[in-house]
Image (cartoon, one colour):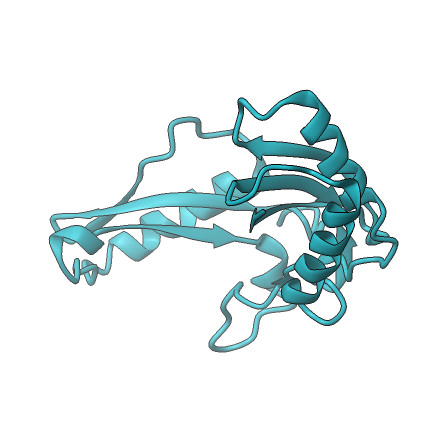
Length: 177
């Protein structure tokens, strides 16, 4: 048994070769989730039941959370649904609309330019580490004004959650000026 921390996990990069699954991770740790997964995979491989759907689908990833197997195991378990993406109240279009209003107030003269804004969303729903990802050659004055336009949106986001607990996340927003 592992120490049953909800965040403890191993993401296995699997490839099916000759009816057997093999882990292709570049770095295999000696931690509990990894070792537990590897032991289980050895037993599953003894069944010789692996079949690749096609050449292009013989590689996939498997997230493995030890806490979900044992006392918490449910038939038909899948790790999907453990996390929920961050969300702006009213949706991303409402965020873009507020941002565009703020950008117009900043009087930026780059008509037709596509920009990508990247930021982090705290577990409280606040934005920070706001950066202009593209275009890289945008002048500093415009970057500062766009970042200021983002900072002027005071509505908190619903943060990303993992197992119903809020966590820090990254977000990218493309917009056209």
